[in-house]
Every structure is written in C-alpha cells, then in structure tokens.
Length: 175
Image 1 (cartoon, rainbow, N blue to C red):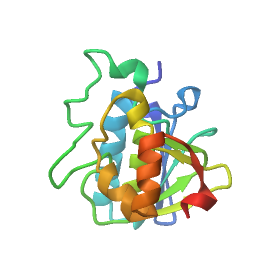
Image 2 (image 1 turned 60 degrees about the vertical axis):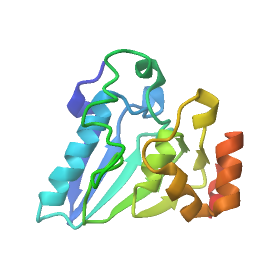
Image 3 (image 1 turned 120 degrees about the vertical axis):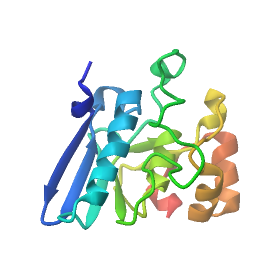
Image 4 (image 1 turned 45 degrees about the vertical axis):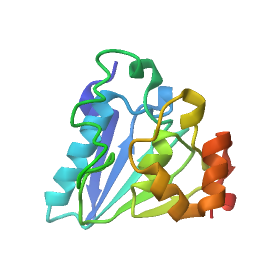
C-alpha cells in the first residue's frame, strides 16, 4: 500500500503547480489517503505565493475512477471525515480556493472522478478522455455537486442521459 504522501505527486515550476493522482494500479481511485492529501495540497498551494495556478491530472492510464469501491464498504472509508465534504463553502474534493485549477483529463473520469474534474475551473481533455456518471450503477448519490455542475457543463438533456444510463461519452461529445 502506498504511503499517503505517495498517492499524490506535487511538483512546482515557473509558478505552476502540478498535482498528479498517483494510484495507477486502481485507476487513481479516491481512497481516504488520496482525498485527504489532495485537499491538503490544494490548500497548501492556495497559501503559496510562489504558485499562481494548479494543473490536476492522473497517472496513466486514467484521470480518476471515482471513490475507491474496495474501501467504500468498510468502516474505515473515511466518508465522514474532512477528506470528503458535501456541503458548505468548502464543498467538494478540492475545497474553497481563489487560484484556478486546470483539470488535465488524460483518461477516464468516472463517478467521483467526473465530479473531481467538474470541481476544476477549466478542463482540457485528451483524445483518450472519457467521462461517465455511474452513480446510479453503483447505487450511490453524487455528493460533490454533480447534479448542478454536470448540467452546467454539458446541458440538462445530456446530463440526464449520462446520469440515468451511466454510459460513457468521449471528449468530443462532452465538448
């Protein structure tokens, strides 16, 4: 098992921070350690005067597969701790911030992974990017604002289709 610091790579160069979700063996699924480390890193970069913007991406082959379903059903999932906030000004996976975050979606962004992408201020998707809202397929409700942010991003009808069917769309269709 990776140490908490290793689940997220942080690099800063020329006033740009790059955060890379680093759990490629499980498609960068958001376990307790990664959720906690990601929010802390975003807060640290927000306070760093040497950083103007952050790029968020995932280690190949995925951007993010959402919550770690292996951990999801355990008592130690951490879903009630500060690593996952579902309401208030710090809502979502990244917390409150003023500096922009650019999501560089380089593979699948599924369920909580698409919510993570939608929490970014801008999205750039590679030709390998695919998006899916599979909350209904796994029997959970979105907790990071998906029901508002997805229709804002792609339109109400396409968002309904994605949320009801759980089908994937590619970057061109999402655009």
